[in-house]
Length: 256
Image (cartoon, rainbow, N blue to C red; front, side, top):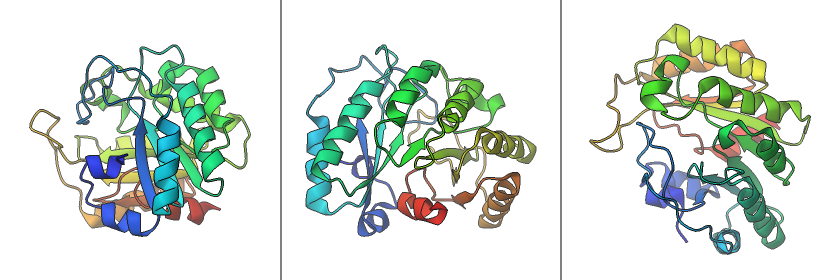
């Protein structure tokens, strides 16, 4: 059983593990999309592993993980985008380790509100879906995705009125976006009801991926954090090494 943290050689792995946090990827290793920023393999999806949740639960129990982030490749080949498998994984984890806090970092489910409602009702603590970048950059950065569809997913999740489930998103900087475009994204996220936002530096994972446009300074990240909070987002974690699952438990605890 491998975590995303280990597979991606994340620079924050030691810190997160010491804090009892880990991220797991489900629904196979092949993604049906091919986003320019992502190094996950693109190809024909594999069969769904019904025992996946049980193995993750065993790993969590044996390593004393307190906060688990469950994410996945995008599965446009599945009618529900994989929502039912997310639910099954959550159920298996909760049966084995009922005390663990669970954050689901989900794909856009092709805009299916039914899929969003399904995972929102699964007993999770945080519903997360990343916008990743500003609308103008979507054709170059997130082929097959749609900014407003992703925004609507977040807005619908919030509208379900589940006070015990926080809504979270994440974006990357250094792809060619402008400060005004980022501020517009902050405004959109606040209006959608997002509770937690992560802002990090895009780092090119391989020579085949999108090149970094520029590196954002720590002072700029601090300003972006303040700008996002001014727009109405309660908890903002920003910095060069920030990833959507980095310091996930701390961000959650800051809100509650």
